[in-house]
Image (cartoon, rainbow, N blue to C red; front, side, top):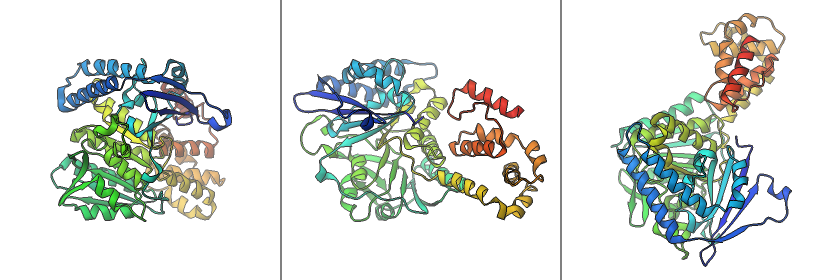
Length: 465
């Protein structure tokens, strides 16, 4: 869905004016000059609505929701609609609507980060459910601390889970994320730290890893938030201070309580607004390109499902924004949309970027198919495997070489192809489409991200082959 992408650029100059414009994916090619809308805003109104939204979300997260009760959802739609009408000029709404289902980069200044943009409601849906939404924040040039890191090979994947030894759900979440890396056999090295993890362990890991997953307590400390570890707190200020010549991870997910909560400076035009989003800004200023965090205290069971779902999508080749969108959909499916438990996560960074971990497995598959002739004996042996998928892939390779040995396997295990095409994993679906091409089977109009009814009809055609 990321082929459609639009940037909403919001500038908040002095005198409570808001300046808004949109840029399409090919904006530079489309036009040299872009027009903008400028209109008056009421900061007190925005702050009041934001406070109401966050209060409502905290009540929902605390367990105030019961099955069939739509109070929270109805109130959220009303509040989100108020913010939408206040912040999005009527002249730009149609253009935004055209980009639904694709990426939405929200480019804002630091004094606008406290607004829950993800929950703007346009009458059809919430922004974070209609778009793969990511925030891009403007800061003074002097605030940037570190160079951007280039992804290494192999990718180092650090999971810090239950560092204080008192969150069994976070521990299981870390194990689940680690197992995803191992099970998908991607080009990555998983490093799993859990129980009695010290501040020094975390800081040392930040210098060495490409992706950081943190599952543990995140608490307030004055106007800052801090990560809770076995021997104390690691504050936003300490993280920034530690950043130096060694750039920090490309992607950070802090799956804890209020890990992206903003300070009161969010509604101020005073200097220092780059610190308004605390831990998020600390990691981004230290070299991270993407930051995923939470807006309030999340339940263990919600956090555990969200963490595993996010990295499952990421490791399957989804973009960062699509992976987080998928998290929200999974949580809404599990706990129900009226629970609002899907609404707690946000992303800083371009939502259309793919980290490039999961794609390596598909690339390796393509390479192996290209070198199939030198591996004939290996494929012949694999025909006798107890694993249907291994037999089927080997039969495909032999078919590509013009060999007949695997034809009976292709008929016997054809369900493997159907399962790949309908897998929740983007990576598996890519492999299934490659197999269709190798076997020269008409795809019936199959689209992995297409309409469910059209996709089902195409699968039926493929199954009849």
